[in-house]
Length: 207
Image 1 (cartoon, helix red, strand yellow):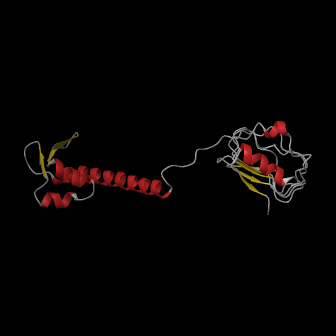
Image 2: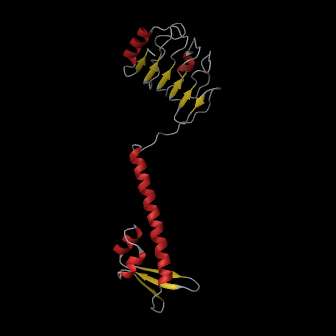
Image 3: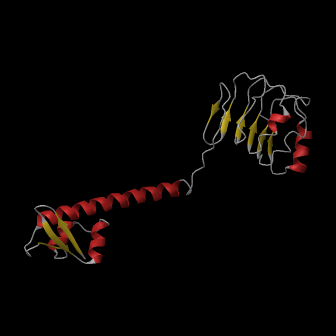
């Protein structure tokens, strides 16, 4: 393979085999070693040896390729470490006052002295924590909007069976974890309804 450098005052040709060039560009061979082993030939337009310009080009090539290979190796290592993929970001259009909202789809309103269920929550929410508040009622029209909800934590509130019907969670098709401890609700009735309609839901009724 021939590589030529042409500038106003420089014109040189670098000659080496494809295999040696690949070894050079992947960091397995350095330019000086290749030159002294006769695997790299550098000449100007008149056929005379011109080491300085050719070495500079090959050094830049080997440095750049080594950096690329290192970056790819780091990227592959990170991908293997994290299981290959990262969780997609979730756009939460509205975050209630005093709550924390994250790009993983979590809305945390725990321990902020809520007395009413937050209105107009984003339907993209995946995990909602309302624990350690003073909620007495969960409006079904608000809860039923959260069709992507996977985790719902309302433990340590003031919920009763009147404020939380037994079948309140059966319409949440993606729900996986439900935490209800330390409320005054009919735990057995809620669990029975979920066993029939949503048997895969894990229900936590103890703190």
